[in-house]
Image 1 (cartoon, helix red, strand yellow):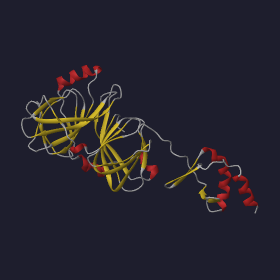
Image 2 (spheres, helix red, strand yellow):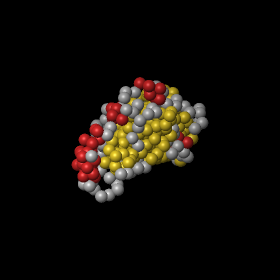
Image 3 (spheres, helix red, strand yellow):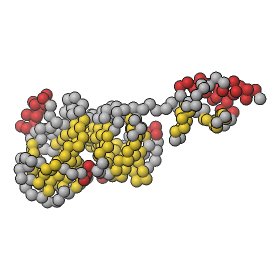
Image 4 (cartoon, one colour):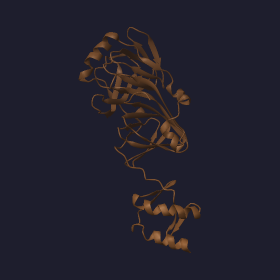
Length: 320
């Protein structure tokens, strides 16, 4: 009886409101104002198998703090792989079209992402005055490095192009498309760009990028959540102060995990589906062919469905 009198005494000290407890999935979160009374509940809980009986039901005494909601919100672009593009007017006679979809406006290292398409016909020649990272989505490209070799790029092939490189694109396949991420040139890039134009550096290619998904190292941030998530940087742009890291992120069926961005990132969904919830409460099921934008400071909970998900990312950061 003395134990129950002690319980009654504790209950009388609890705050008089009905929102102190929030039931959430696998946890019971407790607001700060309940912490001191719950120190005594822990003692009672040990005697009652880890729970305490209140007038409105059982609560566990092993509470955790609720997660803080962090912003800004992520942005979802649906099925960019097949979206309508705009013909390029200065196209050298080539059947070329393009669309810029997403912008990151971090001063000094702005980043843009979009889709380029080429159809059979005359070739398309372009001199890059900026860093670019490319992932082929459909069709096939014959890519000639002027003054160098000719490469054949197929779906899943990944390419890094440095400022100053001149490439000639041609194709025999209808609707040949690649996804690109570029850093538009800034005034302080003039010297570096001019040096690149003189050098005309060769592009770097990683063939069949999705096939490397089985070799990715575990993502450390996912370990506390027991999530089966992996991540690996593949191709890098190493311009000082403007670094870009591209690679693959993969998550399998099982627990989701949290991640807070301290850089800007675009993520193109290559396979499967990513179930995403940001700090504003926005929920997105990002499917293969979709594109996500995660601004600096975004909180995201990453999950997936039964089939798992694979994303190709380009982030404004140095390699991990």
